[in-house]
Image (tube, rainbow, N blue to C red; front, side, top):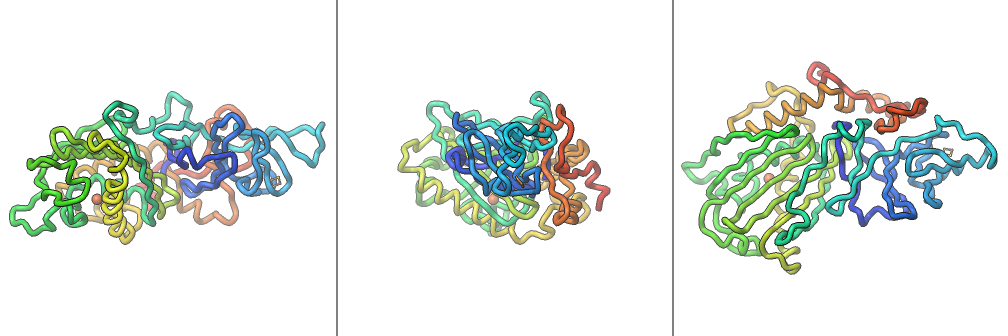
Length: 372
Ligand code: FES
Ligand SMILES: [Fe+2]
């Protein structure tokens, strides 16, 4: 799990004036909307005596701790300590971390890290979103598997044949072989496109998208450690593009928001049948992912056997190593070993300018590979 990326904390419609608790990167956060409708994401630990802010109330534009009533505004600044009276001076070291927020695609993204604006890896783009002729739908999944294993599953063209009965022939064709492919790269990830034979879809709404007997063209790739895109061209004109934004709840649990874009069957009546099919496909992957051992992919490829079709996921692991080397990977072993004794917060950009933070910054690794 990495700091310094944008993560979906919730859907926009789920962030209201009532505070909600969200666990990301193994830490707790509180989200609420102020009276202007602006969403805020703060570390959930009160700097007085460790109260859980989410159990407090939103008062005006602040969140009030349920233990002794300290009030924190959306920037994380403590603006009221009732016990010292209205003329009491509030120490600056009472502040808590507040994270940058962006709302896009109907989702609330929080930047969980301390990089300044210009250095932040961007949110994966959904270029079709809002364009005429494209219909978006949002899907949500939650599962007991590591998010990196899930990214690797998306990047793996060898599993479709066996995990998704609707996509392949379950290995029964004598001449089955995964095609070789070349990788395209960006600063934040790699991807590839394949053209392959796929059985005709016999029924259901997706079969209407596939009104074409030729080969299917599918591309997929990752953007950052936690986001993937998949583009399936059912026919030369009917396209289905899926953008998956994963948030690691912790190392063993993942929440995924999928922005599905299609340029055919645009009427609302097709939303549900398409979602039912997409949900079934996701469920087929989850069944496999939740049983993988070890739960977290090993940091060295010598502990597994890689085949040519694993090329993209091998490259993905290289990208992870570059983010490790920046010191962005959470030291989950240390966090677990100290969890009853230390409260941590993901450091926010405010830590670059203000001094005096009482909550420890979450420890990160610079050399994951050598740590084992
Ligand atoms: S613990 Fe939050 S006000 Fe005391
Ligand atoms: Fe899959």
